[in-house]
Image 1 (spheres, rainbow, N blue to C red):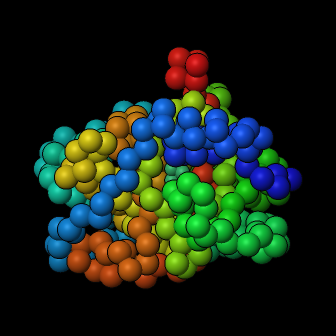
Image 2 (tube, protein in one colour; image 1 turned 135 degrees about the vertical axis):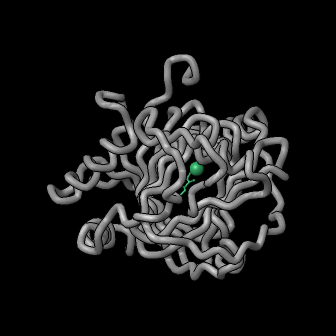
Length: 275
Ligand code: OGA
Ligand code: MN
């Protein structure tokens, strides 16, 4: 049910098969031109983050143009985003959606109950050779119990188009309280244009920054039990990261980061990008 190790990794920085040698890993890192982004000053704005029903302002004209993608047509932007420039926030709003309270408490617990017996036997990893991710343990999971299968089916319906080929393994990533993910772009060789993630056990802040223009950044408030769907521009042209505990601030408010588990579904790369 669980794979004991991930045979592929979805990050440019360590897009490698664990079976290959370090030289090939290094080559991939260089080829993929991984860039670290410095933390930027947050744009403090006292507006409170609202709950799911009002997380997009009521006067906002949002048209669903395809699964998980909205078309933001006026200045009101989703409350779960803040950023350096409103144009950048609008760009991300058109390519990333957060569904707050996507899971109820029972659904969250069911997922945790299924993965915890396996996860707790793994040690959190620090000082990984590539240093892209810190304080984590992870697995890829193929089969889920019936209840969780229903939940994941719901994720698929919201995030992907019907019959779209998805990676068969679901990625489960457990970040310790002091864990964090540095800026990266998921490998275009190993996954397609859409990344859908459930956030369990803790709120977290995801930061996106335009590659080559890190002054263009957006913070995404990922509440516990939310689902995010990141697509297209947000997935390819922006790095994403999960901020560490002491940097987890959103709209001027400290976001309490605890141990956090994400359950991530990805689609298959199209033929072109995979080659
Ligand atoms: C990843 C990643 C984000 C998350 O595993 O590549 O970016 O929500 N994860 O955990
Ligand atoms: Mn990623």
